[in-house]
Image (cartoon, rainbow, N blue to C red; front, side, top):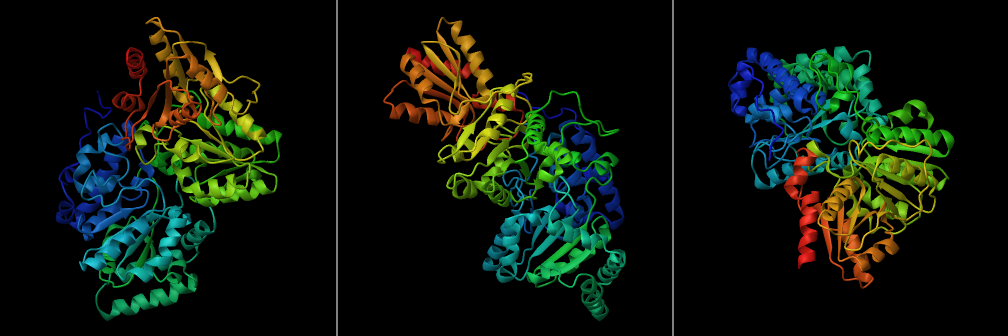
Length: 632
């Protein structure tokens, strides 16, 4: 087994190489800190050019991370980063700088924070909107225990469009007196932020007298001593700030608001945190940062550099010759369908680039909706559209669709509303790891009444399925498709409308029946060839539909074959193979069923081929299981 981590790690700068723990950050002189920030940015740009990762967000929080570790002391103090994709700098300042070149590679550093990776990572995350609630729970536990530690939640402005964040804000002042929220305001999540809250934060930044307010705030924190500071604080808060922002959002929630201040001014950040840690009231510090600071390509294209693969350092360019991905095909196909059917609308939750609905946005902006990081709202919004005869295509990653589970059952399926759930990253998401693997959606959808569920074996069938969904009006429908490509099959000029619940029998056979779902179909085909070399007659079935299953085909081949083997890019528990076992049990067919699927555990990060080999998702393992059954 090999790893994909570089065997020749880039050299660290002299200051960064001296940081073995946060205490080393405190030992540096104030004059050293700008040089440390420069070394961190150089290391990030160099290392991530080979591994890929969340470059833009981390370049934007370099000074913030240094200041936090300068003032506070982890692991006693807790830093909770929302999403935690901006935690690379924190990792580097907590003894992991010499491993940053392994980020997102098998057995290397995870691309998010993990409690199991370091004692300095107090909370793991990968989805937005978790930081404030989790941090508030930590603060409540601290208060109950009677200790004097600090809890700091760091959340981007996009996280404040997320329901859990607002729910947490509603409870902070009632729960604790000591709590610090850092609002890292850069106007971006993955794409440009949208909605009323985003406009509110933007108004704070762009008001004509913003610069004067920031200057006064700087004067305040630079003189944090004595009565003069208190008077100036009062003047800033009650005068200029309230003149500009008479209904500051956070103070309505009972949190004292500070800012906005320059999030790249290290002395200002340090002095501000030193002041805030002395307060006995919950506070919000609003900082303004640049996503991608220090690297011009990332500044020029913050959406691309939010998270990307390998790139050329000199200009930030990436490979543009690759085969179109399923996301590309989805964006193009749904846009073309909408041009023919004015009832089709497209919805995403802050992921126009990832889902490739940016194509729809560009060509049909009047029927495109980005609701921000608000999956539950997106699902309900789609339901409302469906009640009025529109055909919503709701594009959300499989791992994020989990948040809309109640709406799928209670609002879509119960009412029979024809919302189209398009789950990108269905299956393994490789380098992003367990927070982003789409390995649970079959389990949480296949038992929902009034819902159909599909997965294509290739790109051509993917387009057929999207056309089928566009015409299906009898209830909600869902499709799962992988990150990247399937097998590169060319797309025919004319799509086919598929018969609901009808499988494709690719090859007949009488000894073994192989049922390969979606991206695992080619693995089933390889297993078929290996079994035929041993003289066995092997049937090969493309099920197409997870729900409803083609009971006629599956029962027929299970009855005449000695072994059935299913293949799926999903956990085995409550997955596609489990559905086949249930079907055959209810039909009284006792043919044994072997399953090639992911184990009952959270799968680590790494290249898909490496992880499949590690966990037995291979044609060779399928053949071994089938032969064992035949010999038994």
